[in-house]
Image (cartoon, rainbow, N blue to C red; front, top):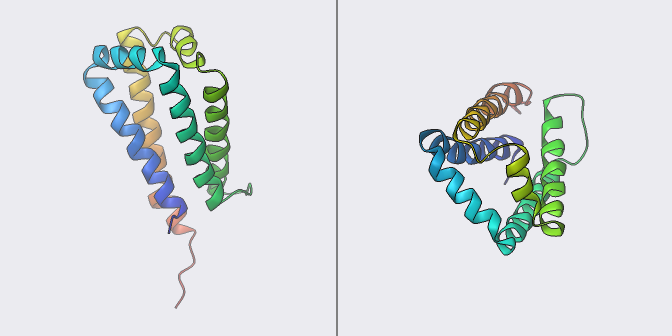
Length: 138
């Protein structure tokens, strides 16, 4: 059974799997991203996967709450919207790479550091904050 903690930890691992090699070799990341965004079918397939992942998040929790659980529907809706945009506009990631200057090594490394910080935050929320809020049945 999927739990909010498992989803957040899975997303953190996904971010780390992308960020750590990018930090080690930004040139290889840039080359791979240019190759990936150059093929519109790859982008559309990534959009479908993004929508499916977003729907997993929304299946766990779709209501917005007033605690840290609000991360689940926010991340779910963002993932669904990203998937829709990638399916409808497969040239969007290529334009985003140019706009955010991801074709430069130092910018790619900076984004990798940002992803590592985000992954650490997700791990903290999943392991410390959400776990403290659970009620243990006796």
